[in-house]
Length: 510
Ligand code: BGC
Image (cartoon, rainbow, N blue to C red; front, side, top):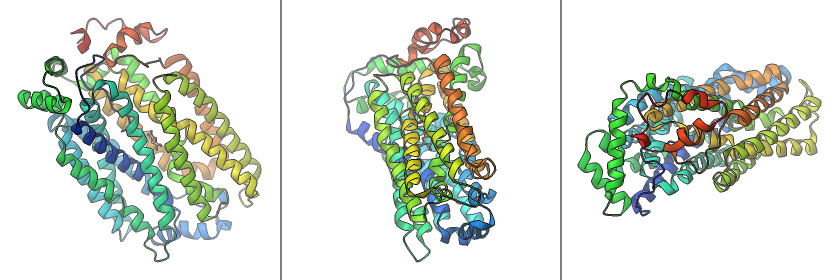
């Protein structure tokens, strides 16, 4: 997933050049992130295409053509339609646990290859779908791909990157997700104009391009030194380390990886270890941040923007290009995060964005409440644009806060011994709540109407208060010094660090 976690190597700077192998691995990350983003962004546009609905969801098609049947808020309320979007995340959730096993036993490279193949198979099923079952099987395969890719790629990146660019690479992955979403929005905009009824097939089929890039990429790259060494391939690991770092003397880093692998191997049951008291602060932060990230309501927009804009009375075309605009805002605002995350810090971004997201969503709720009724829609041009601006303001603030930081912070706060298991909990929790939003949003919109945006703004309020009191600042802190420099100094979390000396020590203490 976006984010990823620092490898065994911590805050120490080792000798390293930025070599072609490191560049290739960035391109790999790009295709993995693009693939995930493409899957997120493509479903909303496809599900608003009349041809697609006519073929797979005839009831929704009827409601769409004649909103008088259901009212404005309920025309897309269909469990099957939501399952089309959500099934991917359910599969990803389950696949993460297998992926956690394969990343360890088969390595990062093989796990990425498995992801690429699953993506290709899923894309083929989707593009060729003749019935709903084929469509869902395709989405499930894509979801398995996401589970494998999002577990292995961030890990791969963190391990292969020289320490000084690890943070930037981390957010770069999120940036690729947002680019994937934007590309999907653009493609939907283009294919919706085709009159031959094949638009949705092309939209779903073009996912094959990032899928192929990932598959071929994972055949080309080497596995990470950390992965090789922890699987006992010491000489090969050292040789690869020399090649990726582009320097001869890699002994200090090599020894640190060997030591970290030894310490990690001592942890017999990684998931039980995660429950130890000293890991409680990072575990709680990791889980809560995933829930909060999804309950900002971002995916109501990412998955269903075209559908939502149609609910607001935008025409089909206007809905799709409005989604392109929000997609573009998403990409550009992620760059703001890249620029400020290590300067202004994580907390500053989260708190500022909390205020902005809260006000934007309250604004959307109020305008919709006043103007969009079940059977009448008085939004008009001016207010339509106002809603679009408010949605963009919401997306922008998400993109420089909870988007990247929801992944970055959990990935950098686990102690080395808990990092791998921690990451699978992070990915699976995120997928679980992404699934919940994907499956429930259209029904919630139907029942809660404009109130859904009050609901999300209440969550934003709670998460901002939580940030103020419980999320520590982690900027400029080496990942293996979090216990001493962050948790032990935090007004609340320090009480959980009392047993730290007793258990397996994080590698900086060994
Ligand atoms: C979230 C996704 C979301 C994306 C939007 C990611 O950080 O995990 O669920 O769709 O941001 O850019």
